[in-house]
Image 1 (cartoon, one colour):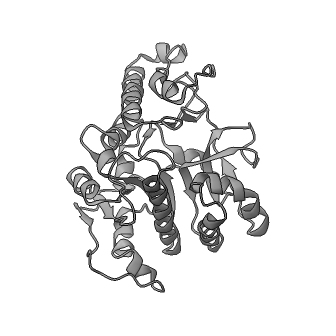
Image 2: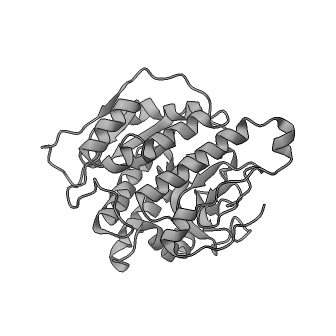
Image 3: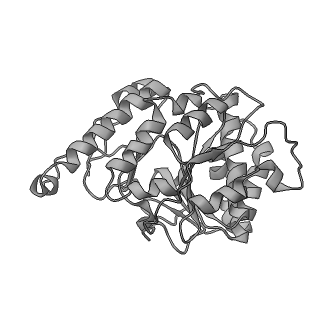
Length: 323
């Protein structure tokens, strides 16, 4: 389902909520001031918004945000999707940098933890980031917009919307793919997933957030994995999973570039510097691949660089899966 190429809306700013405005629990518009006015400027004709999030470290020059945006420009016919991408900044530094390079920015400050640094996995700052992100995504659904959330360390190569399951409520990437897109045995990865705006999906996100106290040491992805059968059984949520052959990951690394791969996610990678270095290699390999003559592309010899630094950081090096 390719998204239409819409012209830019001519809006070259961001939205910074007034820092002193009080939060009113019963009124969601006060929790996310300006969001309802911003979304129509970003959304496609079918009310879909691509959402990612950054902090000051991820948005710094030469860091993940620059690589993320560059991947759209280098991708196959997807640069226009940047016009429909909302970058949510969780600190003032990230917001200011976003506004310098991107037309659609929203400031959602996290005051309960320091989230400006390159937070380590499961640190307090990391956990605050993932849960504040989910609360905003719930509001996007409540306002009647579908969203595709993507971590900023996902490189976009081809249009992923062609692979969204039209009959599912949620279409999610995974760390390891079982071979069956409808099997709940797949290991979900919440760094890249699409949610259709319905009453059922709003209830799903509320249920997901409400499950946090049951698993206090876990992040949103692990909790989703823990409750996915409850979501399907009790709420009737239809969940589909994306093949890692098309939505690549460092967790289940496949080294072949050809085969229609749409994205590459630097997950299973510890350390911002490691992510940036490995993704620079991915971007360079993609540029080289797209410059090849058709015969060389069809030969199927092009390979992604192995994420050596990320594997070393995890103290594991399983063999890549050959396409």
